[in-house]
Amino acid sequence: MTDKKALMPFGTEPSFPAIEMTYTVEWDGYLAGKARDTLTAKAEEIKSDYDDLTELAKDTQFVNSIDKRFEVQVGKDYYAYENKGKKFLSFIEPFNWTVNTKPEHYHGWFRLSPDGTWIRNPE
Image (cartoon, rainbow, N blue to C red; front, side, top):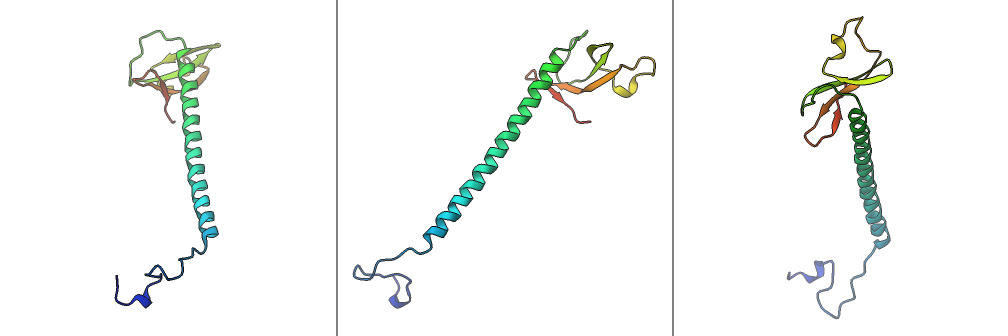
């Protein structure tokens, strides 16, 4: 303890008045706001992760339903097309088709991941 007890912000002996807490309502409000902000941020992060997983599931289901006439390999790029109502997977990039052989629709660029999911590559 210090020798200058009068300068201390609280009493040093049991006979001194009790320490009173001031501004507890404001402090409680601050803590509640901080907790709300933390929980809201975490909820948004979880929603974003869920949306990403939903898209991954849709893409994986889509590519797995496409006709493949070759064995696909992990880590390779593949392109989904549609011609005359039939979807197919190809390793030919969209710009490599000729005018006469170009499929009617291009559905995206995908890569098979080691866990068996198909990841859509940004274009």
